[in-house]
Structures are given as structure tokens and as C-alpha cells.
Image 1 (tube, helix red, strand yellow):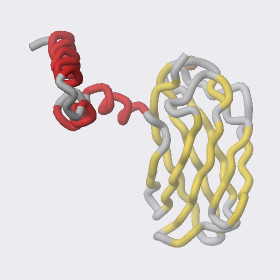
Image 2 (image 1 turned 45 degrees about the vertical axis):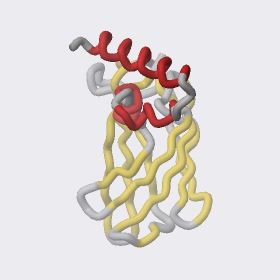
Image 3 (image 1 turned 30 degrees about the vertical axis):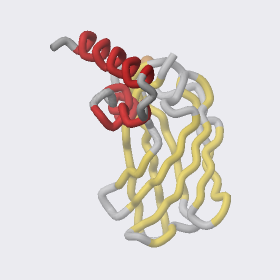
Length: 151
Ligand SMILES: [Cu+2]
């Protein structure tokens, strides 16, 4: 069955259930969840690991990101310990075109292990990477992830 037909069928079933007044909310868990899955793959917020124990728990807003300025905050830890006083750089990168953005993002630690990113922008829509480089007393690591930036 084509996806469109399936979606239409989902809608019709939804309507029917709504008409008889039965738990429409249950539909989401019942097979009409395709859109929610797509959404899940596109978001840029989440937990991302480096190869040397770094864990970046990032929140971007809006999410999925849009062209222009994006607000970003991160919790950083290494091997499970809160990472305080690290040097952090955040670089947006568009691999298909080999370019970054027009602004240089700056990062400051708001409180222990909690870092706020400013001047983070995406200059065009499409597939971007976000590269986070972190240096601390006796080590360094990076975490990179990728996602779609919307118009
Ligand atoms: Cu580009």
C-alpha cells in the first residue's frame, strides 16, 4: 500500500473514531505515527558522544534548526563526570558545500558543566554538521552530529 493511501486510511480511521467519541489520542500509538518518526530523525538536540569519553547533551532552539540564528545550550561531561572549566568551540559545517557559517560562535560556561553558545547561525537550508571541540586539563575530544536545517 502506498504511503499516501496509508496516511489517508489513517486519517479516515481517525475521523471515524473521533465521531464515535473514542480515545482519538490512542491513534498515535496505533500506527499513524509515521510523522513523529520523521520528526525524531530530524531534530538536532540530543546526546552525542566523542571517542574519548566526552558526552554532549545539546539543546537547540528552534529544533529542527532554521536558517539564521539558533540558540544552543550544552551539558558537558567526561566519563560521567561534569566537565567544568573546559575550552569549547562550536562550529557549524556544511559538508556538501565545504563551508561554515558567516558568524563565529562563542561559548561560555554559565555554571558548572553548563555551556551557552552565542552567535550560532546557519547560513542556508540543507544538511549541516555541528562540530563541538572540547579541551580540558588532561584531554580533549570532539563530538559531531548532523541534521537538516530548514528554510
Ligand atoms: Cu551550503
